[in-house]
Length: 494
Image (tube, rainbow, N blue to C red; front, side, top):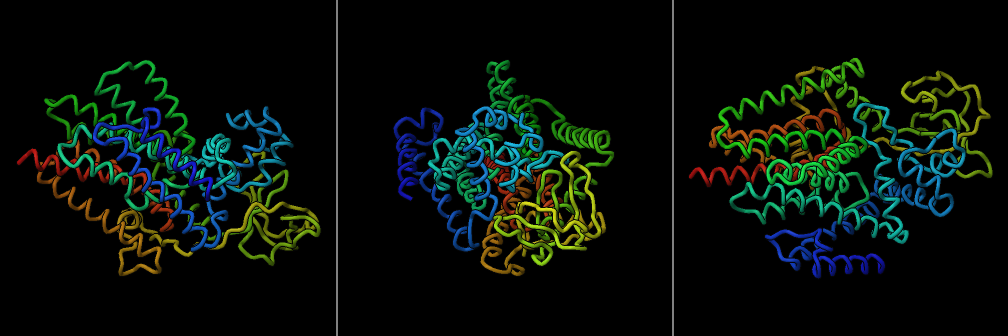
């Protein structure tokens, strides 16, 4: 805790003294104000840690703690075998034929093993582990310090988003900035070792690059290089969030410099229709499925994973059994090594062709020794989806926006989520009302189209309340912008 406090004070001092070498700056706030805002934002690190460490039992059993441990394992390789570390850092490692990588990274980890990008638009865990392995050089083996660095990264993303959109607001610019920092789930999840801080920074950086190229007409060549690099990284992080945001922001900025263009609303609708058609074409060509079919398959996979299981690994395959400890037997004198009992069914994936899910109806080899990857108990906040397609669409919006909502909340966590859901619902309803009053302003319509598209995508693919709340946090800055932009339109029209 002392180390965390010292690093926290150092960052606050640097923001106050020189705007963190000019990275943390905006003309609407003095350095002292930005340092104060980051102080309260940084308290999210302690809050997140306290919730998962003391309320849920142990933070190191959850994603954030696992990302910390596994990025530390990767960082340790730098001191033992720097060549292998560099290969792994840039994605050139051989996970299963290189015995050093297998023994030092694959066997001891869970999120790295889960982070295979062999599914369409999969969230790749390995990007987070790689980035945080670099941050570990200055984290002193301390979770709170590493989380604080992630919090600072997300803060930079917020500042870049603010610089991109504040020019379109006639009033409440400071409130817009503060809302992006402290909307509850964004404040919490951007202050942990998760994908969200890195994604928020990447979104802010890419949107700001596009703003500079289209609106400010700054040097495009170097920015196109950075934009291409950012889009490449986004593919291995959260492409289903980043790509729609980049596409919509480009349209928004392009229309904003054409005030006399008469068919903006039609242009928005056609652009989104063509984008959706292009996505469908790509999915048909690559997976022989429509985008909706892939989303529904993702929903099924997510719900299946949320039922829990026991996951084992050897040098040829990755095994999943039902969550029942009587199905396995611990090997004597070996930590986290097990055999599978006779006649036990399981599913597995062979390392040589990981895309094929295989099934063993009854185990016959009781001598085969596996290392334990992890045990996951069944989630208590899973959602139920109807089989009817249209009902599925409706309930996906409902889950992403308004579930739970006080009357159906169970427990402290769901009550807190209900409060944010109520806030989001109010913001969207007010924004829609202003949209009608503004005669369907094309710019506002475009931002709402982005928000609704992402809410639907998250709602239909993520069958768990906690996961929806976490994934939705990255959409909150655009809900906030839509709200304040709608007020600006209303004020200017009156």
